[in-house]
Image 1 (spheres, rainbow, N blue to C red):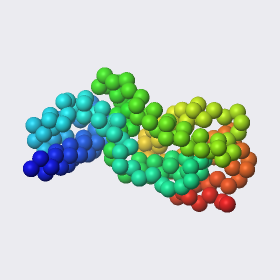
Image 2 (image 1 turned 45 degrees about the vertical axis):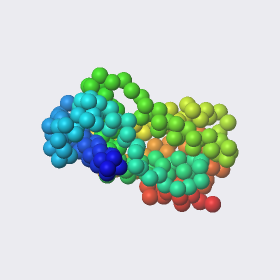
Image 3 (image 1 turned 90 degrees about the horizontal axis):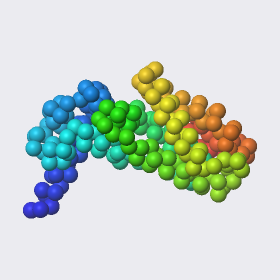
Image 4 (image 1 turned 135 degrees about the vertical axis):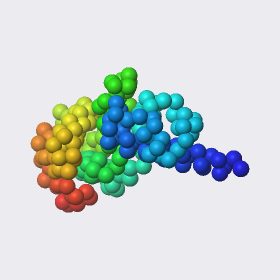
Amino acid sequence: MARPRQDRAVRTRAAILHAAAEVFDELGFSGASVSKIIARADATQGAMYFHFKSKEDLARAVMNEQGEGIVMPEGEPGLQHLIDITLHLATELQSNVLLRAGVRLAVEQGEFGVQDDTAYQEWAARFHEQLVAARDRGELLPEVNERELAWVLVSCYTGTQLFSQVSTNRADLPERVALLWRYLLPGVATPEARARLVTGPGAAGTARR
């Protein structure tokens, strides 16, 4: 009997987390309430507090699990794959409520007494992995530091998606990410790499050979 209970507990936690993401995405941390989250999840107060100690605890979970379940595009590691990942994340931000809420809470985390860069560091680590592969493929200029570039890219991406959110509710985010790469690549990629890279929205995996 233990396994059915465990499965039910996992489903309940996931339902609460998803409901919290929806409410945080719509209202932000300050506007959200535990009662609204419980009602959205169709859960009990006991179930809520079994899995999460407080609204702050729930917000931290949404913020730090924002990347869970995202299926990244396939491709050979390197600059094109990194570009494809960032374009894919742009479309995910248009439809993935957990990612959207996690990003919003990462910006608002001061409101619930948190100073946690875990989510940013995780994305920087993913980007860095692709940049190391790009270095091995000879795609980066000699003066480029892969770790520094990963940090710059996460910073620029964060600002880009926030600007897009305010301007168009992220409707134009893929185009803005493509524009970011258009101006970033000349400073980091070799001419040979730039000649075959594709940065337009919907161009994942279509690099010119």
